[in-house]
Length: 203
Ligand code: SF4
Image (cartoon, rainbow, N blue to C red; front, side):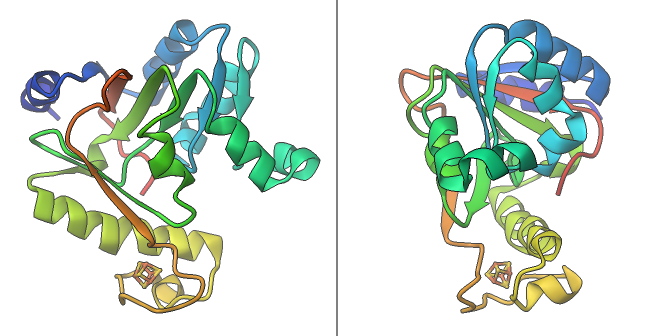
């Protein structure tokens, strides 16, 4: 995929941008860049597929509630709060528009709130499958692809979790779609780098 138009649009919106052909190159780059920091991870299948937690953990203090042993030792509230106050925060997006808007849906909302304040730098790791031509299609993608597949993976009691096929706009107590964020530009005072990978990653 030719990322050039998206890269130009993201730069116009004041983002730092880097592009990679595959996971390995992206992971090597991030491991070199992030050294000696405290790092928080948002819930993300992309980060899991990248194997980034293990590569960063040797040179950084990394907090991620998706890591079973940390959960067991400290509990999810503690780990999420630690991740919200680190130097660096890393997450993915449910969708990215070609013009550079970042769309995310969240249940506990730790991920979307962590991308708005509290860190020196934020990285979004985004595979080509997350790119949508318009904001309308990006919102559709977040609601009808990302959220149902996450609900299915979590095995929760929502109608979308049965087949992971589409959003039913449920009123389930376990509904994972509670906060919805469209980021137009980096929050003031925070450097935000978009890492685009020419591969399909996460949901
Ligand atoms: S609103 Fe409910 S049905 Fe729709 S994706 Fe979210 S959890 Fe699933």
